[in-house]
View (tube, rainbow, N blue to C red):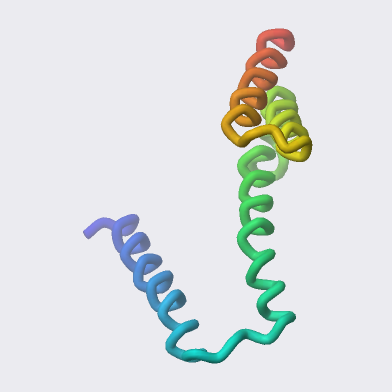
Length: 103
């Protein structure tokens, strides 16, 4: 087995164990309110971090104006309650337009 598949298998086991630990440890008890608020905000925070790191690249060397404009346009459209698919299309169009204009 190659190293990469070993890592994938190991991460799969760790992820499954982590997901099973919550219900096994808590049972039918509710999380305290502060913990519930943290869990609710965890996924959006991690997604935002992933978007920023993928957008900027290693050491912020890969920051591209077209991508930045596209993400900003899609984010602004979602804030204005534009449907998700339309916001994605708008973001892609803005990114393509900026890339075409910039060369």
